[in-house]
View 1 (tube, rainbow, N blue to C red):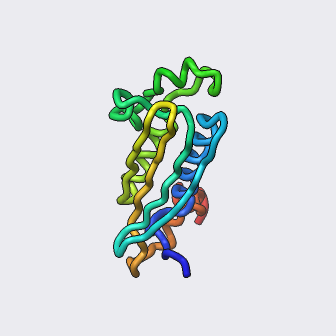
View 2 (tube, rainbow, N blue to C red):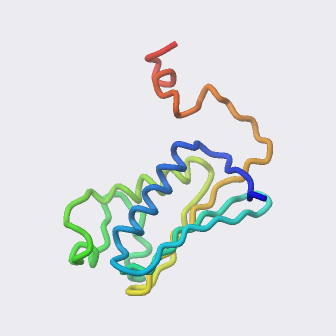
Length: 143
């Protein structure tokens, strides 16, 4: 028996999970990455937990800010320099636009857990004309 469905844009949910999982892989030199999901009456929570380098308490409050990159990641031999610091900003923004949120728990050298919470589908109206897979129609490029 499954845990149900989220009431969200499937393409954007895939984008969010791709970013969270790829970051977990990127910042975990060795150890484990666990993706899990659980449901309540109104929400579904998907967690991505790693045993990677972790994030300091000082930096946790800034995670998800536009252009912010954690300082010790930049000095790490795990991640190459560069990047814009927009990945998590966009990820957090997408979650919130769909009525959800992302919480982060972390300890340096112990790992990080990102938990995405989205509304559970419980019979809400779905406007299929707004499906993100039909970008051409939404942009007025196809009738």
